[in-house]
Image (tube, rainbow, N blue to C red; front, side, top):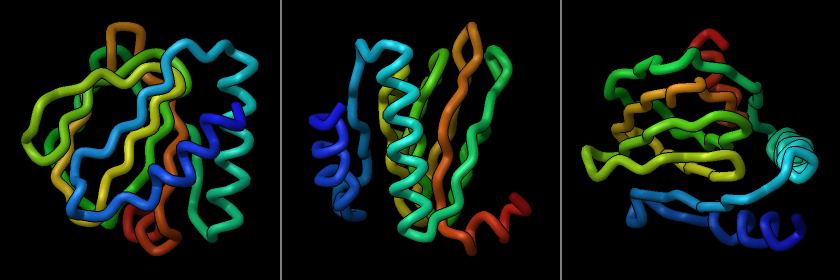
Length: 130
């Protein structure tokens, strides 16, 4: 878990020049995923970010949109995510996706649904009514 967190700290320094940000962490067991969720929720909160866990129903679609940036940590299920009209990638439990400010993105929940930790600025959360 510490290796995941160390990699995450480096990874979250991504810039808009690196628009398709995705960190693959396949193979985490349920206890490791729970620890990752708790640690990242604490870290995000300490940074002043809004966090919440959301669940999308199987095959739910989020049409292309943009907002003030977000970080998504897949906890259960899967989702196909496309950033900036690029290639689709599949996020599975343990994967972290960083969406930069005003970056176009869309999401399709997998066949078993998608549960994920969502983090964004307090201002963005308020703008979205979260």
